[in-house]
Length: 80
Image 1 (cartoon, rainbow, N blue to C red):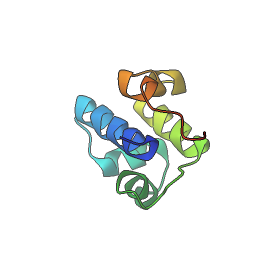
Image 2: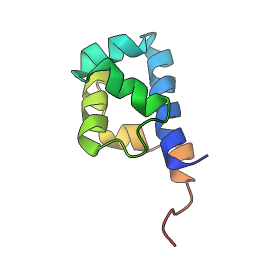
Image 3: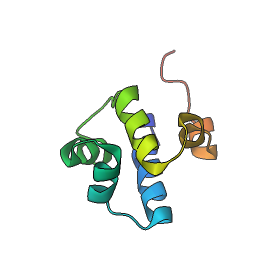
Image 4: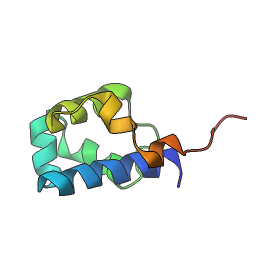
């Protein structure tokens, strides 16, 4: 799995844990639903850190908590 897919999967995982929809996440995060959906469906190859931070704020977690997962930690280096 690449970084983009791993980020999208993490967002979906966190929404499922909290029993919230993507639209509810967008509302809580003050991020347009279209932006969240673009991240989830691969239309945004490089979501900005500010967008991810807002999503984390909406989920009431830190950036560290968002990224510190086995899937994130096992991603291969993309620049060689």
